[in-house]
Image 1 (cartoon, rainbow, N blue to C red):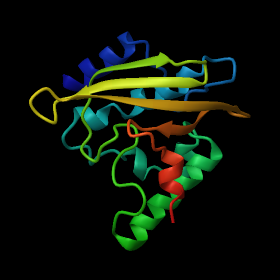
Image 2: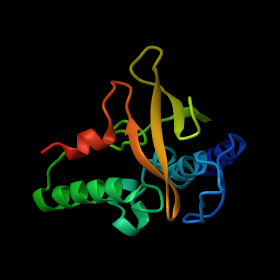
Image 3: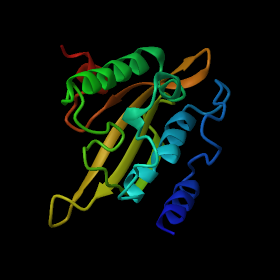
Length: 168
């Protein structure tokens, strides 16, 4: 029930509810790739036990390239392999789309920023108490031969996903 409600809410927010991996061409609005990412991985904040599915950061490169450009997909893949090899946190300690290692989101919205290649995602959290916080992530998208893809994500502290994953 909660999953259905979350997916319906995302659809009502304007998130494209096409099946995972649906083609997002350069003719599609740039925000489509970000909306599809949240549509496909909203379950991470809805279900307490998602062991039957792979989390975004556990996905193989061919899945990552549905959303991310080649460079970012390579960096995410390298970090995943590092975690598997060392059994420790490498550069990324939590999910970049939830800006947390304990995903939670409410009132998620997706909007176009100062230009059409800047996509702003905002959502609320229950913590820290008493009032929680609002998280704002800024996605930079680029057109590739496969359509719009995420090139980088800016976090509330000003850092970026590419910078974080590029650290040695």
